[in-house]
Amino acid sequence: MTATLFVNASQVVTCSGPPRARRGVELLDAGILTAAAVAVEGGRIVAVAGAAELRRRFPGAEEVDCAHGVLTPGLVDSHTHAIFGKSRHEEQEMRAMGLDYMDIARRGGGIHASVRDLRDRSEDDLVALALPRLRRLAQYGATTVEVKSGYGLTVDDELKSLRAIQRLSLLLPLRLVPTFLGAHEIPQEARAYPAGRADYLSLIVKEMIPRVVEGGLARFADVFCGPGVLTIDESRAVLTAAREAGLRLKLHADELRPSGGAELAAALGATSADHLAAISDNGIRALAASQTVATLLPGTMLFLGKDRQAPARALIDGGAAVALATDFNPGTSPTPNFPLILTLAVSQLHLSVSEALLAATVNGAAALDLAHETGQIAAGFSADLALFDIEDLRELPYWYGDRRCRATWVRGVPCAA
Image (cartoon, rainbow, N blue to C red; front, side, top):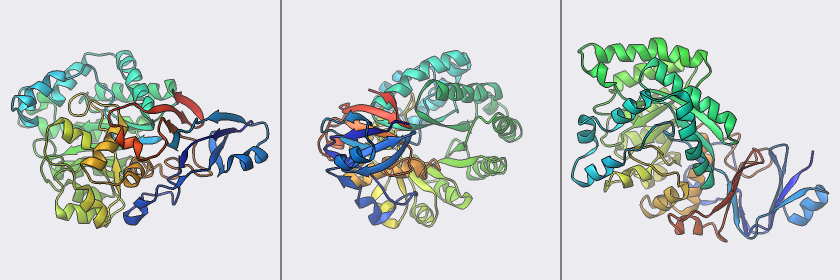
C-alpha cells in the first residue's frame, strides 16, 4: 500500500490530544507545527513529523505539495438541514419589514413552507438538490457533515428524506451523519384538531422511530424543544423513546427564549444541545457538569438579524464543551461557508482562533460521537484534511466570506478542490 505525504505546509494545525471534547484551557492550544509533514496510508494518518524523516520512513510515497498553505483537520459540521427543496429567500425581506420568526411561521412560512415543498418532491429530486450543496460545504473545508430530516413530518416523507441522505453517502466521499428530526415541528394538519398534536407525537414514537431504526437510517434523533414547538415534556417523551430504540440524542434548545432545553439535554445524556442563544445560567451549569456538547450556530442569529448570540464565553469559562456548526438550512442560515462561522465565532462570540478551530474540529466530532475517529491530525485518526490558501491559521477567520479552501480529503480520498 503506497503512502501519501502532505509536504510543504506553512503550518500543520494538528488539534491533537485526547479523543474527546476539549474544555477550558485545553481550547487554547490548537497544536500548530511549522516544520511538519503528514503521512497517510490506508485512509489513516500514520505519522506527523519532518518531511525528511517521513521520506526516509516511506520511500516511494506519493506527495501532495501544500505550497505553503495551512493544513488543518477537516472541519466537522455537526448541525445542518441540507435535505430541502426550494429556498425561502422571500422570508429574509419579510424579516427586514419587521416580521419575526414566529410571525412568519404563523403566515405559513418557516419550516411549514419547506414541509409543503418537500412533500411534493421525489427522493431522486432531493438527492439531486442536496448533492451540489454538500459539495459546496466540502469546498469550504467540511469533511464530516451531519444531515437532518425534518421537512417531511409524515412517515413516508421522513423516511424519504433519510433514504436520500443514505444515497448521498454513497455518492460523495464526505462522511455524512444522518439524524432523524421528525419532531422538527407539529405539522399544520395536526395543529388543526385538538387531539392532532398528541396523535402526531404518538406517530413519531410508535411508527417513525421504529421504522427509522429498522431501516438503519439514522444515528441520532433530534427534537426542536421550545415555545411554539415541542414542550419539555413532549421532548422528553420523544427522546426517551428514541434512546430506548437505540438512537443517540440531540436537541434544538433555547434558541430564541429560555425553555429548559439545555437542562433536559444534560439530564438525558444527549450528545449535543444546539443553538443556545437564550440559554439560562442554570442551563450553562447543567451542560458544564455533563458530557453534552454545546453546539453554537452564530450564522443563524446573524441571518435572523438578532442582536444576541449564544454566550460562548460564559459556556467555555463555566466548563462546558463548545462546538460550532453552520446550521445550513433554507430559512435561517443558508450558508455552506464554515470559515465564515469561524469569523463570527471570533468577532461576535469572542473566541480565540484556537478556540474556534477546536470547536469546529475536535468538539464538532464529539458532538457526533466521532471524536475517536476524526477532528485531529494525529496517528491513527482518519485522514480527513483541509488545505487553506493562507500562511497563518489566524488568517482563516480574518478573510471573512472568502473561500480560501484549496482542497479537502476524507479518509485520504480527495473530496473537493
